Image (tube, rainbow, N blue to C red):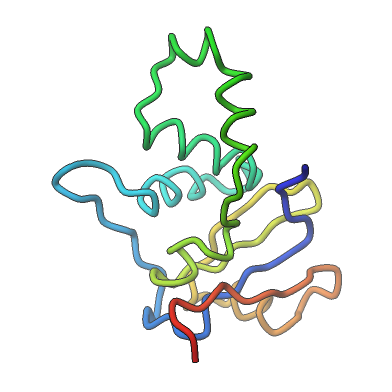
Length: 140
């Protein structure tokens, strides 16, 4: 199954309160998924959604390099065998004010809500890019 978006822009969720892109905080007990997603996705067009979701899983669960070297394909297969939310449901567009652009290769870039680049994509300024909203945090 394919988990990636192509030529797509995910806007900030309609009920997101952040007026600009905010870096998600960590907890005293360790890294949060939004913090890990932000750290990885802040490298423009370095990750596909599929690779980012998997890398966040590995880091969040603390899976060692040795374990990945031994059982990497099995760990990845087990991870993708379960239903999961896509980046539309990520806290980045839902809570922290980040739009997400996926290029033609399916690689992603975070774009802060307050930027001209965000407005360009969100307003349909690129006819080749499909615009979809991040998921709401609550029902209307």
